[in-house]
Length: 55
Image 1 (cartoon, one colour):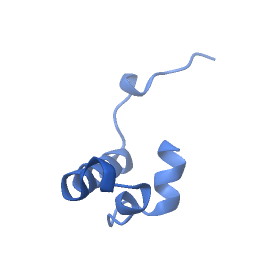
Image 2: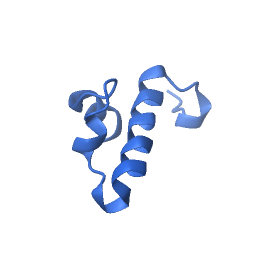
Image 3: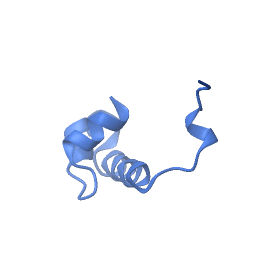
Image 4: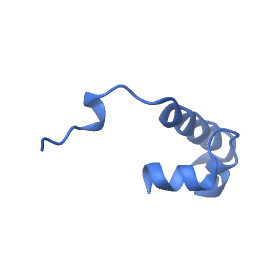
């Protein structure tokens, strides 16, 4: 079974929503103020989804 890197497939909408939430959290709270919780506060990024994708 061949493994695929993340860059070898199209990003899924959920990935994009989580990354948008992270970008917003970092822009609003800064590097030290952003947390998994602030990222998960984004409407499309509930906590379980965030952890299942990137933890």
